[in-house]
Length: 560
Image (cartoon, rainbow, N blue to C red; front, side):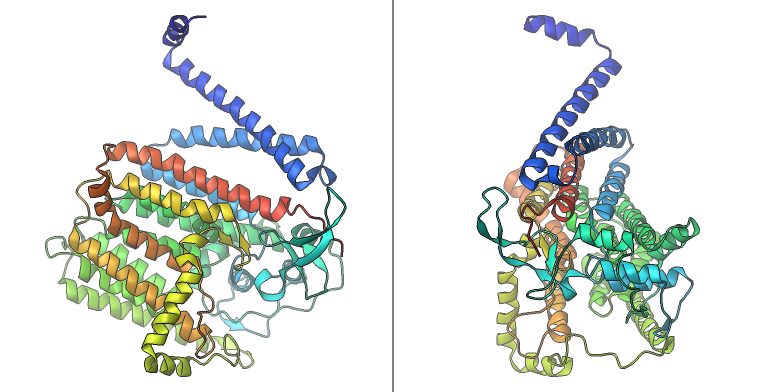
């Protein structure tokens, strides 16, 4: 068949048949990719010794076909916000199940508090305990950052049989103590589902005194319990409840943003964002509110509804993480011009009222946590006796230059946290490829944003850049004073997730200079069409690699 015949054959097809043929070829290519993918897993991770090859092949091929089907459905949705929200829900659901139980930062405490709220317990009583099923789940899935560490030593190479050094960094294989037992995620599921071992000691309610930030997860858990699910089912239902709240806030942000929507979608679909958004952490709603507030700040006119939504989000983030988030109160006053402000009342009066409301909500929540607390023993200082907030604050004030050097050195040692966008778990599971791809995808999304003109304007761009610098310094200062031993030359506890709103604010500020440097020819519509598959593919790859690192690897079988 000549080229002319082929062109004539394609031209004779109706649009519906062309689409059907195109999607049919995509399904065939996806199935072939799944076969290749399963073969790589079987060879590299020795899966045939744990799972029949036919199930691995069918599972990978079937998953790839489902991805193509999901892409076809998302493509039919009307509007950028709808397609973006669908991608967040679909990819977030993958993260909810690819991430094993209780592996998100502080998720054990968050799970116990959410479970208590789902039972209707809106106070905090240390004397109350949880069902045995919950205690078994917590015992089977220890938080890796708390009571386990990455194992290293000598093991038998499965290819040569020789003694070979091993290191399980980046894989879910944990060793208890220097010479203790080694446990994988599969062992944790077997221990919980098989109910092996002695009856665990009763669990008491955790040192966590918030209610509202855990409400979405608690609703999911309450529904799961009504349907007869146990502790594990409640955990996944709580994650999905948080994911729905995160997706709803992201949808509101995408609908509200009048500029740079590809950048917002890139951050919303960042694997680290979905890892937290599909967990039991209140960071799910916290991140959603951050993205919503920044989206509102891209609007040319602020009407009463805009101001009310921003105020509600600002109050919520101060309830979840107080004091530092008071900086968000000042942004509308600093960034909006008198012409842009069309809400009722003067800007400074409205800002003062929002600040007073946020501070009052913070103090009210703290007072509620003290008054509704019963039977708790003396609560130890976070970080141990070496941590003293007042002494650390005095040390900072007396040694400002040394403190600046400490902050800068911490950023430098952590690749300014842009190189840690693929670190999951309790700072225990780095995925190197995602560490590399994260900045690349965010940079590509910002280049797509450069197609928009006009930009935010000099006032808003400079204001967002200044806010990012002050917020980053405040986050580091808070961790230095609250969690770090006095005079230590590094900051303890900083993670990349704390800097996600900082990176987004910097990206929005940099979009206009990028346009002047790149002079792109693509229009806004085309840029947004490209952003959805780009960001969704990054999120999908993140979920697959997270599943691989927890459930498929490691490739060394280490004897106990």
